[in-house]
Length: 160
Image 1: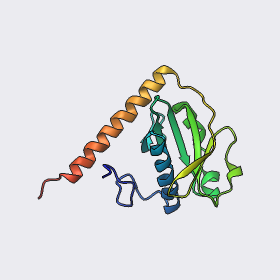
Image 2: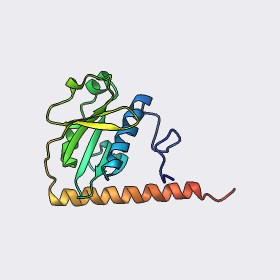
Image 3: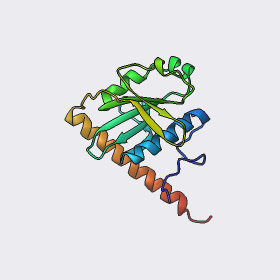
């Protein structure tokens, strides 16, 4: 049984994510779990931005995956270059009906169908500074622990 659901009743879905974006997210989360990455959705970064997905590999590598559900979604969002400061690798992820040529060549690309995903272009590595890596790893761990505690409280809520 999953501790935190990626389904429609998930508290991390705040209404801003479209069904298409949630489909991409689900497929990418499945892929990353298969790769033995730990994943957090909607992680607030110290820059004030909020990353769609942040994964932590077994080796401690930090990936950010920016979900784009359409051409228009990509065109209106210009905050993604800031994510490079917060990860070792930056990926875009989208659906099969979105033109893949719109995504920058210097970022990785994942194609998702909601049931899984494939890395079609690997992201170039740009290693984080040790202090930044430590800060991000602690943020990741603390956020994961807080969300687990919140989920436990929801499951074990006392009756009124």
